[in-house]
Amino acid sequence: MDPAPQTHPILSYVLSRIPTLAKPKPAAAASEFDIEQPPVHTPSPRTAPSTAGEFELVERMPGLRHPSVLRAMARAVADVSAARSALQVLGPRPDHELVDSSRAIVAAAEAGDSRIPEGDVEACRAVVRLEGTHDAYEALLQEAESRLEKVYRSAMEGTDLDDEAAEGEKDDAPAAAAGGAEGGDEAVQEEVVAVLKQAEEGKPVESVRLVDRQLRQLPEAFGRIQGLRVLDVSRNQLEVIPDAIGGLDHLEELRLASNALISLPDTIGLLSNLNILNVSSNRLRALPDSISKCRSLVELDASYNGLTYLPTNIGYELVNLRKLWVHMNKLRALPSSVCEMTSLYLLDAHFNELCGLPSAFGKLSSLEILNLSSNFSDLKELPISFGDLLNLRELDLSNNQIHALPDTFGRLDKLEKLNLEQNPLAMPPMDIVNKGVDAVKEYMSKRWLDILLEEEQRRIAAETPQASSTPKAWLQRSVSWVTDVSGSLVGYLSGNEKSEKDAYLDQQF
Image (cartoon, rainbow, N blue to C red; front, top):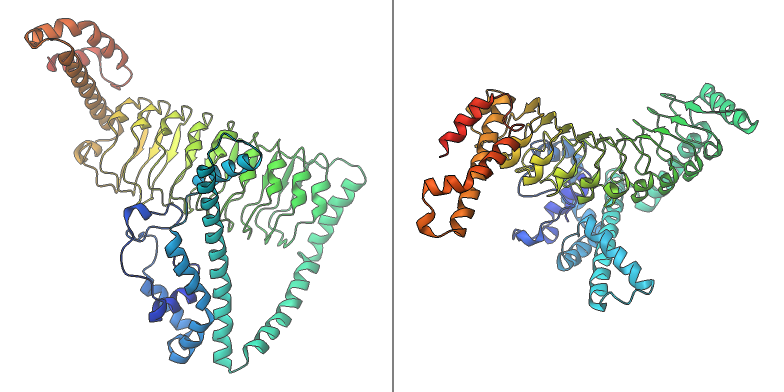
């Protein structure tokens, strides 16, 4: 709820030093946990200490220490204090999936669906209103940060704030005009014009590659190049992709990596033939919900951005997706719909803030390569369904806070590469971990078999009279069951000969 020092350094500094604006001391209750915001109780080792950030800020803006400057800034952000107080009453921001489902219910009710109780509709409207309030608050924080920069500049130069703002507008105008006029050097301009002219003349244009050309704008006319299959404008200076991009009906490959994009147009969902989308290394905080409509997507790379969540329905729609890269973001959770990506072969979500995985994660039956490393203090456990990833070959869980692998882990018979470094593991013991992946698989396989045998023994003991529950009687009743279990576990006990398994089973009786 409070501005983050990384995104609003001046505002964060000012609010922390004005007594009337300081945030309340009581810690938030567990029920107020906000999935959309970074955790405040477990600071990430990836983030520099706040004191270091403040030192750098004050070094750059020494006038922040002046009481008169702080007072002026406090007056300038009084609206932020009022908004924050209101949000403290309204409650934390709802998670993205709840907002999406609430919007769907409200839309259905407004369309005339009388089956939805009025009370539920009102509750959903309240959720949507709360989300809108938080959105408005974020916009207010951004505006306040800009306002404080002007206040500081005015205080340091001794000029009137209004005059300063006017001068800033004059200074910005030529730069904006130059950016619109130039859009890159003259040679690039000629290259762009040549492509568009070729398309206008009816000549086939199937591939356009304008990589590392210092482009600042992508002409809307590109959206009218019929037959275009590949568009690569990586490593430029693009801040916006025009809505006209949705007109490229035949586009199969779109590469926008290493630009300055802060958002993608909703029209991207019209690219029904798109196979490959690369938007890595930009400034994206979210992917448009419409991206779920790109049902032909096979590869999606959204790494090295500032994503805090993925679209709620992304897994229900992108059923053909094979490779998903979302590493180096700020994801705190994966939507439950991800579990429906049954074609997914590779998932890389390392270096995020994941607090866990969806309970049905094991439904990713085609998954072979999984990287969940470096979620640091956030990732502490894996779901029991993890053992259903029977095709998993490579797994990286390093640099997390996992204390125990799930009991079903021993079912991962095809696992060839495993990294468990920098975890406080107690199960399996570290001496087993240090022996490598085969030792871990064998240990967890035997543990899983023990659990199955104990459960069956308890079940039979509960179903039969005490007198007939001797070990011998139990063994006679269970011989067929044990035969079935030992047969089904052949794949789980990797690398062992049948005689070894039989000897182990004998120990149980």
